[in-house]
Image 1: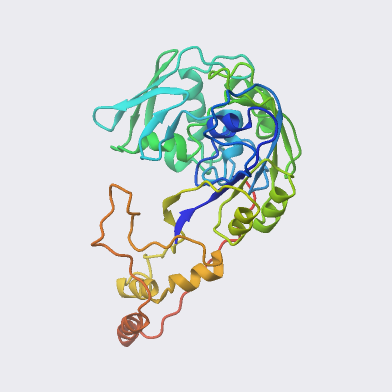
Image 2: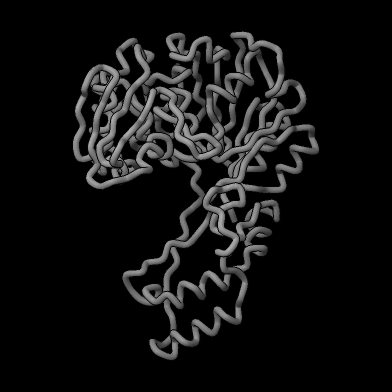
Length: 385
């Protein structure tokens, strides 16, 4: 079952579309729906002002990218305050946001160039030294448990000038720029505010994103207002934004249909999407590579034997899983990559649904090693961030 998601929105207040589509950047792993009050293709110029409520499928418990769970795909609330150094286009290309470029000739020695004259919302400079300070913080496993596996790949950094930071990796990694979107490393906070707030930093964030957090109760609504010093003026057009955690898909549907939120995100395919369409919403979304899966401990029996791993894969009934988890609405993976991926190869299908073959592999293993015994750990739904 491939990764997918839904964003649902309905226009309330002026300038909502430009804010949501171009500023709040909730496109990661998402789709959206509107109910005919406005269109993303409207030719009407956006007007500054207005308020909106966005419903996210998480309960926000921290505003620190170093400690927040689920930075991607459910960490869009952080983008409202921090923005990010780069984005990744639907075609898979790294494109700049706060950064002007991230380049390397050998995949080991890299140069990050920032847009000029950037400032955090507290008025302090968003410069190369600020990026270095944040990345050094992210390299501390006691501070940034969610990010350290990525940030620790950096061996050294040097500030060349206010907009230029060079850094060297411990080993070649051509995909490193993508970490600046997908892991939280691309979210940079004001070093002045981090030092001043200390342990309170996770509740009083200061970034260079389109909005400024004005009030928030952990697990409750967050109130944000437009960052008037945002680099991409006149965006954001929206003046006030409320972020509301709505974890359950059915509750999300009810909130949207009742008008309790102007935009919402549904991360798991479900019949609720049909309900929203029937109510007049337009759904925007995309299917991404990846999805749900098992992680085997291959360091010990029984999963150190490839036959057992193959048997587990062949014993899965994708259609049954689709019905049980997504009410039959999920896009089913038949190959490792989707058909529109440059890596798509129809000659490498996903193994599926062959109980006879799975049983024969298990029988062969047990004939040599005896009965299989294994423990499966299943995490609870990720409902907090």
